[in-house]
Image (cartoon, rainbow, N blue to C red; front, side):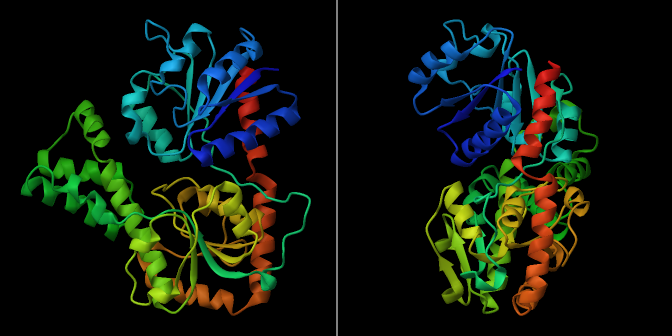
Length: 392
């Protein structure tokens, strides 16, 4: 079996995902090495003792190890993975439009793995030369695998949200940076997405650019997409903030575990319970104490978020908007609670109805746990990766 290299020491959540996959891979018989990016020179020396030519592969997230780090380049600028003929399997947890600059210079034996089918289609369209797939949605972790989940009625928090917030106005400097005509053009796309939240950024961008300029050459559209990341961020944080506002302004206390929430303006701010920002394990501990876990999807219209499966596996009822992919595994009031971005004014009614019925909540929590346990842990994702690396 292949020896496998993973990274920790940069983005905490992605390091945690890596550790979950590594643990599952070890259970299958793989030898693994955890490279600490915060201690690169020490880790590099140890890695060379672990490395076996022709039998070592890299599994990473979001271009860690291939984003220009000097300790992975030789004097000619050659990446270590090319010099050592190590295949890389990069799981990208954001839209590819954020990473065009890295995608232009990937290692030779590079595999791009998307967590959303729309991201996969984007890669096939704009980077057909890159080995793409398989689709691999994010997964969840049960914090205490040998312990039963606490029944819903005995949990400490009615509603929690784990995740950060950024005021959408933060991105206005990118919207207004050129002139009034561009500003109106960008706000036109934003308004379209806010009014039609099932659309993707690339779908809206294509329509608006075509309306403005006529037929746009593919290469020009590709360049344009790389410059529109602020629209994705503006829209996703608008809806994230709005979901919390709807609940707290309706009198429902929401405990927030993440950065930036003190900047959210609410009419009933006393119901916005701002707590500490936590690491992955800390977030899982709070989910173990949560009745209703609020999720607002990033702009993944055909994928999932780990917050959903983490909530389910740790016994909380996940209250979330959906996606094309999630529609195939989630059922409202069976294994989750569902709302739509188009009708967010109904969110308080949905949440209050669930909280008022502990028996139904427990039934949903049990259904959610079984759904996630049966197919949406990191061990399930590791099985896919195991088959992929062993085919090499």
